[in-house]
Image (cartoon, rainbow, N blue to C red):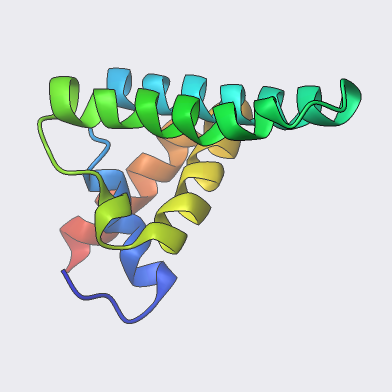
Length: 111
């Protein structure tokens, strides 16, 4: 799909993460990425930097292929997907994910 802006992409991104278990696997993967970044700095070990994308993408892609049953949005929109993943992580961390899903669903129903 062709999107002109990130704001146009965001509802699509959420639609590709419709199952709570998919979002949970993404959350775990993003948490692993952040942990790897912290460990690489604290321990001054670059191997954690190599592990970060393997863990992050590996867990996320697992959820797409085996739970959600779709192709990861990263394949078509890598930078917007990365931004959206961190946004989704933050919304889940702060307990505002359901509110955002309801907002997006409400906007889609109004169209």
